[in-house]
Image 1 (cartoon, rainbow over the protein chains, first blue to last red):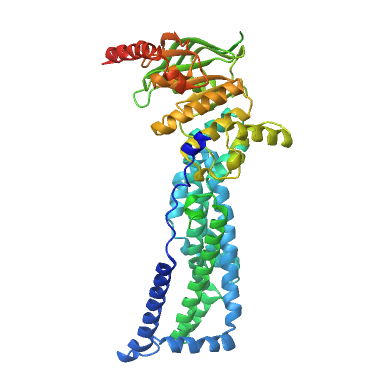
Image 2 (cartoon, each protein chain N blue to C red; image 1 turned 135 degrees about the horizontal axis):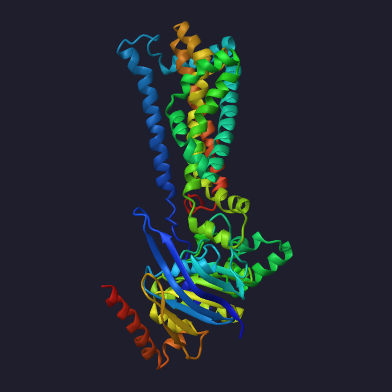
Length: 275
Length: 260
């Protein structure tokens, strides 16, 4: 019993929870910044005589939204972009993770392929968009593929890095317990890579919207990126603004979903357990 | 008495990084550990203690000589040998019970038997109340006790302890030594403790082997014929503790001067 008393300490790294009032203050300040920004957006451009085809005011942008719903099938465009972002993100993540683990398990392949991977990583992925359109035509496939290609690399790099930095003593321990290679992977290396994988997924989520937008700008006939080129052709700046805002919200939603998934997967980490 | 672990003229050389030379980590190492015995290997840092552990665990093969466990030549990892390190190596994504079960998952034990072993070790380590706790919620001492529980769960013939107390504060070290000594005595398992702490070796072991700096050889063997192996604190108050300490310390010192 005395041993328990001496050895048992309270969970470490538990920072005192922030007081509710401090949180409220933060929320008020954040909202105040938003109000300030929208007010400046609404009143400053007319004050300086900037016409609506350069910078439409906040209210002009809001008025444009029902027009876009009625005339440009806005909901269908949002769904088209969201679907492509999600499909490209999932596809790119699966391939990126699979290649990361595969290369992590095979140092020989990793050494041989490393320079090519670096080259591909440096190559501007968005530049592949016209190529994909030439190959697959004016449909949803090119934008999904551009998205997948952009998402692929950060996830591959993160997973590969985590495979190379697994504590070698953990692997030695598993080997000393007579574990087979596959068991070591599934019981040690794969779970150990989770923080890196989810960090890669978060980066991928922010990039997915870029892929979709580029795909739609270059050769789409649907989606919010298409509305940007369409609005540009009509000199309808409010439509361009709205499409950009909606694409941003789409990216935030995807990022939020990934962050929520991360909190579920990494529940055992003190940083997350106490936040 | 049966011999649990035996090193016969074991030499291990490594290719040195860079210059293409060869480093001899241990040379002509001869010793044996009897069944149920607690042997401490004492030596300065860099004397090849960890090499010795790798060889005994079957993670590494000697350049020449033989390592035998229960009379069988060690050719690879062996379920009769389990080790724990200074780092507890608990898996942060598993709760305590899951961590203790880790070593059992390599074999084909039925699920019920795994359950029984995990419960047995939780009880022995007095961690039953913490079975569902996550490693980050535990103190350093509790984590090391959990690591010992994981080591004992596989029912090894011998456990190799590589400086298991050296990362802990002085107070925790003392209580944990007592806890380990009691647990090991109760489990009746053979133990090989690697340490650089003279009083720890005397307080816990039946026999102390002193190793020289690299290339590691055994330069002294000392029987610790003190009572209370299961209680290191009581042992360290024994009147003969001081003279044993001086004897071992002198051998370590002597060797330091040779190197300098």
